[in-house]
Image (cartoon, rainbow, N blue to C red; front, side, top):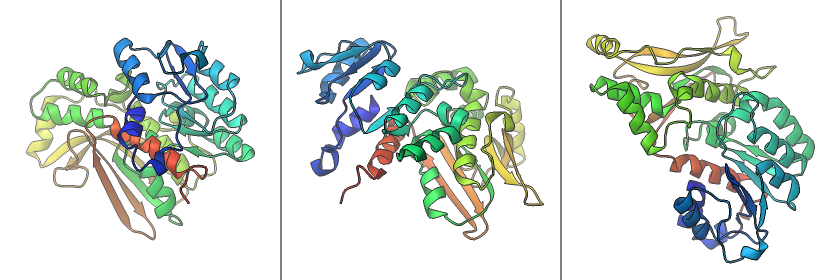
Length: 337
């Protein structure tokens, strides 16, 4: 929905956005397709009114084809340029996102991921298939919303060896910990995070550190020079469930705060990385310590660029949708001449 809202918001200059037509949409109610493209405003109005895309009313009602789900649609419709996967995270088998991505790539379509699960479960397989089919995969929206972590790491830090990558990758847990410091309950803070839309559909993924670990896996596999892609099982994960107000007060009294920190760190022999997600005491005035509430941040320690840090404050889901648009516009097929 928010991706469509951004397209409507940024309709000018038309030279940039007239190339993007949304021809297929899917949610839990089913999938619909219109080869001429949907009226995004009508589609949004219907979705906001009914909660469903199925039977959405458009100007070209007679041209709409309906399907039971996304997989049936991507198998059946004529060629399309890009599949955007914004389906919920499913770490069991990655579906429907993973299967739809495989089908789309095999059919010659590019894929933009906002959903982390397919990349966590089959990073190498998806990339190998994309190379074979000569299409592109983009996934900057899977890591820290609009913060261009993947873009900076791959493009701007090219040639570097990473000594460590460390950061706060989950705005929900950061918000919860910040609110607990102020005396609010964990439950109240989580409810507020869900209200704004920053929490995962399953908030356990946030609180238990799994969402942060998913992002660490994607960052490691896309940026680090490692022979074999790492898997989620290789990350030592501890969430914030056991952090109490007393823990936060004790840390504050000593000049520290507690953050859920992800890190990939090269060992002393420079032979392999270790991967952790865990609550850490960090100095209040440090880069990580100053990231509060819905802030997310990352710190790259490199051999040739030294240390580069970035931070974003995202109070909603628009930046993630903007990152999807960024990935589409950066694809060769859509770049302006």
